[in-house]
Each structure stands twice: as C-alpha cells, then as structure tokens.
Amino acid sequence: MQMDGEEKPVEFKIKNKPKIERDNFNCPFCNIHSHQVWGDVCEQASTDSSGWHSMPEFRGAICSRCEEVSIWKGNELIYPDSSNMPLPNEDLEADIKLDYNEATSIVEKSPRAAAALLRLAIQKLCKQLWRKRRKP
Image (cartoon, rainbow, N blue to C red; front, side, top):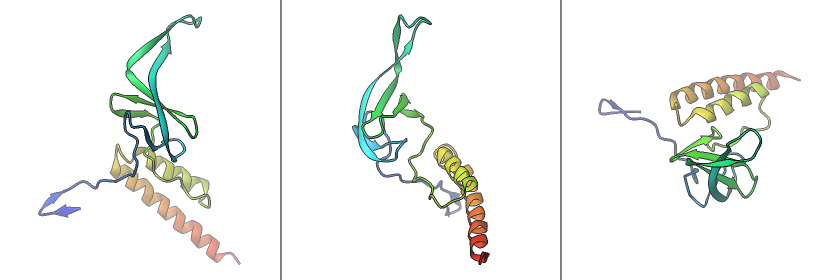
C-alpha cells in the first residue's frame, strides 16, 4: 500500500497469536485457543541417558488440548514454523493445500513470498473449480 509516495508494509493481525510466557493462545499445532504450560527445555548430555542439562535460552510450552510442545528461543517461536493461520479447506486438492500451508509457514518471515504462493494457490483453485463446473 502506498501513501504520500512512501510504501508501508502490510501487517497481518492474528488474534490470540502465540507469545512467550502467555498462559493461553491459539496453539500453533492444533490452532485451538488453549492453555499453555511453560517449562524449561533440557537436552540429553550423554549417549547413555545418564544426564540432562538445561538450555536456559530456550523455553517450551505444552498445549493442554493437543499436548504438542512449541519451542521458543528468546521471544521467538522457533518450532513449529507456523503462523496460526486457519487450516486449508478439506475440499481443496492436495497440491493447493501444499501451497497454502507453505504460505502460512512463511507469512511472518516473508509476506511477499507468502502472497505469491497464495496467488498460485488461487490460480490452481480457479482451475479446480472450472473442472468441477464443466463435468456433467
């Protein structure tokens, strides 16, 4: 969007977006607004399982709904690589779902790339709908 000769970036507003140490938000796995249980992230320190050590720069949140663990480094969600966008419609063909899911995974890192993928998905959707319309 251009105003007064200067280009302003488009911002996507996501309701209940995941945020570090927030008690509840839309889970990046199941996309359900649910309670999150926060804890430290540890890694195995030896090959024989005899020791674990804390990784203080990381935090983990367990979704009370799907029990999946999201991992955070500092204030950034690093796993899963997700944006909390709605899931693709079940009626979409597999390749369209693939494009849509890829777009949602990069929308916060590169909105323009996500827009290009969504445009491709829309083109494929138009072809899908045209084929269904032409079938007797």
